[in-house]
Amino acid sequence: MNSNLERLHPYPFEKLAKLKAGISVPEHLAPISLGIGEPKHPAPAFVKQVVADNLGKLANYPTTKGIDELRETIANWATRRFNLREGSLDPARNIVPVNGTREAIFSLVQAVVDSSKPATVVSPNPFYQVYEGAAFLAGADPVYLPCDASNGFIPDFDKVPESVWASCQVLFLCSPGNPSGAVVSRETLTKVIELADRHEFIVASDECYSELYPDEANPPEGLLQTCAAIGRHDFKRCVVFHSLSKRSNLPGLRSGFVAGDADVLAGYLKYRTYHGCAMPIHNQLASIAAWNDEEHVKENRSAYRAKFEAVVPILREVMNVDFPDAGFYLWPETPFDDETFARELSAQQNVHVLPGRYLSRTVDGHNPGENRVRMALVAPVEECVEAAHRIVEFVKGFNA
Image (cartoon, rainbow, N blue to C red; front, side, top):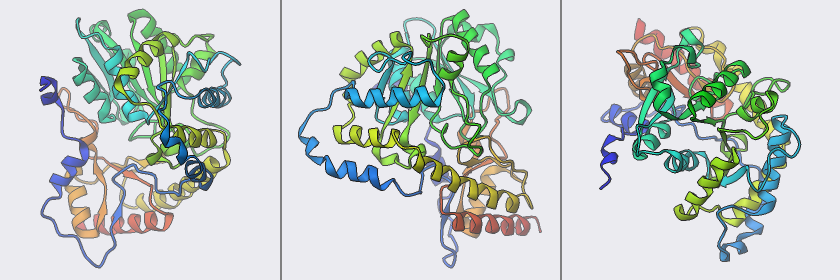
């Protein structure tokens, strides 16, 4: 077996299952899960219809590069959304359709890391665990940059030693952040691009929450948008990941894309032809329909906005919690340690959240996720409000 498999940590939800093993939940209370970031809003009916209408395409092998119309649709969407120069995002060279961002993040790292020399993959901390697992299995070492309240949950790149950048081959960004929802500014993105030029690494920006934001007039900036703003229309050393899972409530469609530096994506596409991960044609056609429609996305944002506006004031009675810049998570401080909070909340109120330490690593004695929990406001608004009231009751009772 690949010895790097031994380096993998248990996934956060494995740790959570172990934490809650043997507890009994109150049967008179319906379970409410805020732990898993799986969208629960209805999938768009018109997208489901496209899938149904094209099941005959199951008889055809899809190509790794995807059909021209899908890549053209993605290029048009990204150009509109991120104010790119018309024609700078070439559908044939700057876009690769993928089966969701998770497999894309993992496979891109396998394709670009050169493990014949010292290799590190630099990541925010807390982080999406695939960043770390991808690094391990590519033969690289992860380096974790703390993200906590002191730095607005964005890495302080000025504090990163030159020795870290010397071996860095990939820097992951997550904006809006998972779990904090923090959005990286243009100023910081520009700084990161300058660092990538100086030290010759790839900036990989995970932007799968970019379409869930509270202010319709102020969508989060993306890495390619910053590239365009500073005149970097070839997107050199920059790649972004986008998905329909959160934007369109289509996690089961497994559809997204990677866009950016054409040289990076040429090698990545070569890797994928062997990897065997082409998107089924009926999923591609359904994706075209989803990327071409913004009305269902506006409705989605409105639904999340209503949940945040209802839940945060309730939780503030007993917790330190802020509205996120974007995304669908809350990242509140807990009044006692996060593992005890999550376990006892399940046991007493049948409400389920994820301990923050499971999304982080301890570096120099500091774990940025300790004494926080991640709450995904994915359930219907009535359930989210009910969960908030139960949390208030739980904290008051625990502290009594």
